[in-house]
Length: 295
Image (cartoon, rainbow, N blue to C red; front, side):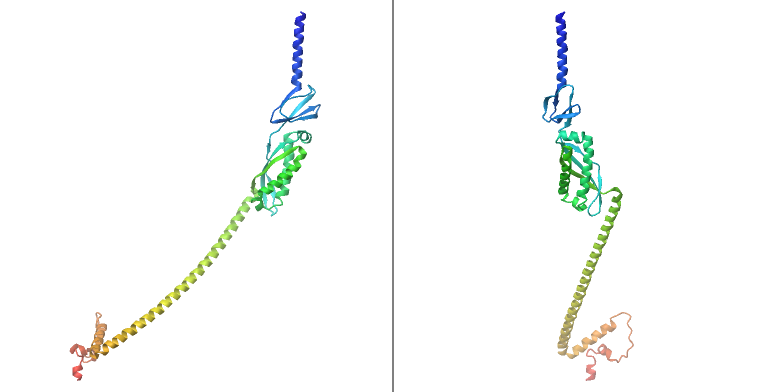
């Protein structure tokens, strides 16, 4: 009987020791960090993964994520330095660097994200508002994001977190202004197109005028040269005719009379009313042209 009581008492002792051990031991995963709390007050911070010991029953453990966390605040409408409204969509990557300060300042990830959203928006308004819209969309974008990250990281140290990265995912126009801006851009492009067309038409007109002038000059010079060549040809022909006909006057008279007959009688339905004794018909009756009669 005493033996059974001893066994029963030993079993109860083992159960009690197991309960105490379970309450005194806790593990920290490599992706976690923890704070040991006693009656709601933090006692120590545990950032090394593995098995750890705490006081049983009156101490408890609060775990925090040790990994890099993501947070994407809502898009914010901001006025740039050139008075243009844009909607900036950004995201932040952060890590809980000081669990004790994190617990004392914000306590949970939900609350830190709410506080962080205000810091990000304030920094966006300050940095982006001091830059033009073209700068935000140019190669200066990286420097602007770096400035915002530095400002947010400086403010985030109060929450026990470290800003690992900050990025502007998208920069867009507000829906209320997009259509009017697109219409203004379209109007501006149409104005530029009309201006370019007018300039092109002016250049084309100058080219056509210059071409017409050159054409007129070329035609005039060609006609001049042609008239000179024609006059020189006619002079040569007259000279040759004179030299040829001067050698035989009778043949010259006969040749000219034949040309006159051809010009006057060569066409159909030609009617001439002339006297048969007219000089025009000298070679009709006498091949010598009346030269023998004159003699």
